[in-house]
Length: 321
Length: 253
Image 1 (tube, each protein chain N blue to C red):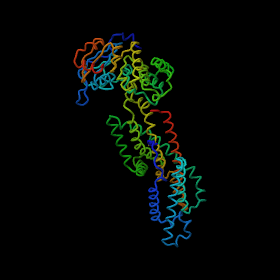
Image 2: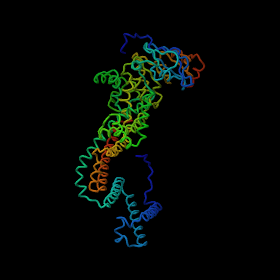
Image 3: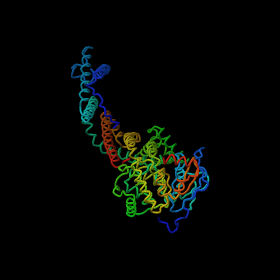
Image 4: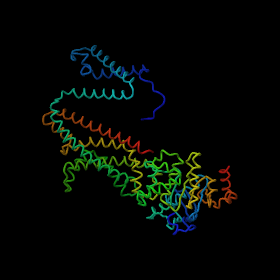
């Protein structure tokens, strides 16, 4: 939560000018979008193709009015209910978008089990291995970037600069196609894991560095004056305090990694994205498969978000500052 | 104390000779000479910015010096030393801002050093910890986290944490300066108790009552120099230098 002021903000229903503005803006937006083509206007305009400007105008006004009324009603709900209703409505919009495509649902249903087993499993295990390696790389990278050792700093800063500087897709190709030139042959899965780990290790290096730097110098001094060596101080004092701070950005990276693992589909790894493309291609049903994996990815990230929330509240309870 | 037989009371434990320290161009410590014998209680005082904290931070090399020598228990402190951690185990430090480990309980704070540095078994470390918690009179708080304690309690835990390493010397860096006024006395009482046990103490503080009560010697610093040092009775009654007089007038009035 942001800082919660003790003075109540005026609610929407007390601000007629704001309501008018919302109504006016939504009129303009809906008029520009041209509602007569969309599902939203269909109930009011039975024959979308045969109406003049007047009917269009009426439709726009009606929909904008309903939209404003909807906002007004939601603004009067309790916080929790408000959040739920807004979520539900946005999700409805997504579903309308989804159903607007004239999808072949039996096709989706026949492919779904394979996507959920083979696809989700491969995506998850590639991501899990990569994020683990990336975390280890990041810890060492962060320490190296903070160290006064020239070699360590140079290697670490070169590493982060390069792997943050190249597009992940390029890295994946370079590793898969480039390593064999050196006589090192790697399969698609290891190549993908290497690319993902190196790339995310570079990003996470910066996160860990920031986390380590955020710990008060007094903690170092206290640990060192008890006789802790560097490694022990890091492991027992600094990192345990830094990790709770960096959980939100780390969660971000985990989620981004989960989705960027779709890039290894270019190597022919049988993860979600690859399966979606190949299964869709075979029967010219691209959108069905793309939308299906879109939802699968989304559901997986929602699970990650929940886990992240749990971890955050765990640290809030157990690691007081 | 663990090594009393090898270090008889009265032998030199800290020896600072002609020591200088610079921060860049700023000459922070000038020609410091100070000898501390085992069992002695030294109080270092002086106006803020006089270098007293810097000086005691040099004794366990949280700060490095550039000229002169510092010996702690016979070991010289310098840039290239490999055994600084051994010296630091012998020299406990209590900080102005306590610097307890916030993610550990009080008991864990106390056992951290003995278990991970001295490699004592947990049971033994916890026994020691509880003994020292009792000495600083907060044994009932062992399972709490530092943030659940008052400032005075936190500082007493910090003192106990240093004691758990059974150091030969305890350094106090303005231990009561960050405390609310009503908590100062509980920390000072703890320190006075401690002084009675024969431990060697070097204490930077403005608490002149404490100095009068326990110090064997009071050292007055100003502008990076030791201006004078002497037994507390003499020091407070007949300070040699004008600067000391002025300082004492300000602080005691």
